[in-house]
Image (cartoon, rainbow, N blue to C red; front, top):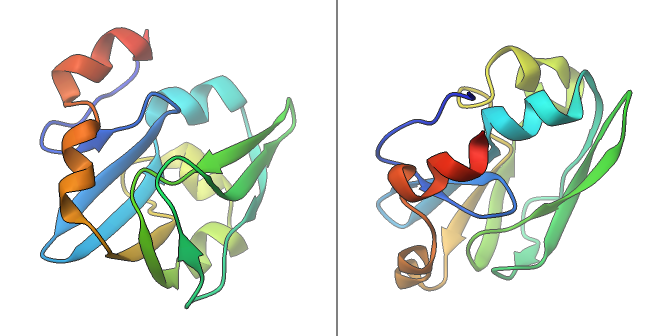
Length: 125
């Protein structure tokens, strides 16, 4: 079973969300990185890009497959993680420690539509 971290929000598309004030920090789950295999490329948006909950904001490519990244919340991208872009395997080493984007939340209540760790756990098996 994949690692699931308490206190985060989860999308059924296997992204996680951590909220700090009005900032949403987004990454992919341990289950997602494990299913993809060795990640070789990450495509992330530029700072200032508008993102909408439930829509694509980038992609990850592995030796096995490519997968769209689906944003769990709406807002404006404040920052994309240069480490993830420069060293995509960092996601494989620590999926919850390697965030992808930080978003200024347009509507923090959107997080209520996401899954808790307990709700997500069955999807990560």
